[in-house]
Structures are given as C-alpha cells and as structure tokens.
Length: 65
Image (cartoon, rainbow, N blue to C red; front, side, top):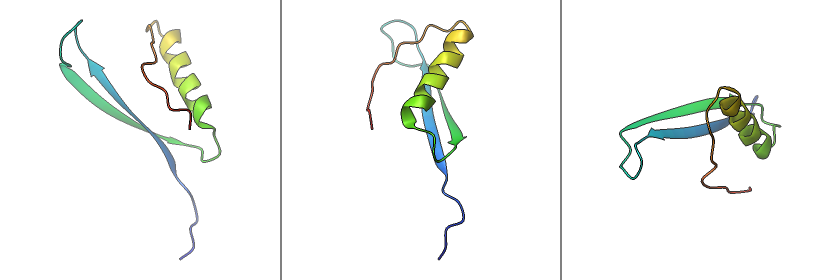
C-alpha cells in the first residue's frame, strides 16, 4: 500500500484550576502540522501566540525529542 501523505499532529490538553485545587475544566486541542516542521518550533509558536494575547505561560514539562 502506498502512502500519499504523512500527517503530523500536536495534541494539547489544557486545564483550568484555582491555586492548589484540582482542575475544574479540561479541553483538548489537536492541530495538524506540516510533517517537516521541527517539534521545538511548534512549541515556540504556541507559547509566542499565548504571550502575545496577554497569557502568562510557564512550560511545566519538556521532552526534547
């Protein structure tokens, strides 16, 4: 079987919670990406967009693969 296209996706789970409390709301997002885009560029773009919109961003975990 021949593959015409390789899809690459970014899945992001976001939680809203008050300090020291369990999450009260969860939303999951999926973005389709260009297969040749490097993973670190994706995270940089997402963080830049959030910061540009006035959202203070703290990256809580990182896997540099």
